[in-house]
Image (tube, rainbow, N blue to C red):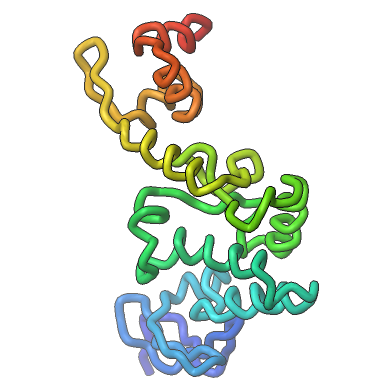
Length: 214
């Protein structure tokens, strides 16, 4: 009797996945404990790269909230919404966040068992909101969500930040690059470059200011 050309995974369980049948090309049709079915490669199952359809991460985020009595609070909603904007292509805000490469830092990430706890602690370190009109805003509009890149900001501050962000393409020495690209070359944040531009500095001065020690 000929042996199959694939590793037989029937009767085994991998995290929340149960292989149902081999569908070819190294893929198994698997059923998650939540009932969802999907194709998963044999290697992903065996190495543990895929352990569920994604329901585990969602449930863990919810449990983290319940564990600390914060599941129904604004801060937990902000944390969940932040991940949705950065990671869910179906979210209405994805194109302006995750679609532009903006991520949630490892310290706050939902895949980090302490992600939500860290987020709560870091937001508390920002101090109390001046009033209810203030919301959490990223200082560098091109930067990720991280402790060093957020602040409490008024609607006026956020609109100003968004207007500054529209300064996208800068031509210098015959090259056209985005503000983010130039900032990476100079080893600084776009917000720092914008600060000097707003205060009347020419880009040549800014470029030399940051690259003279490189």
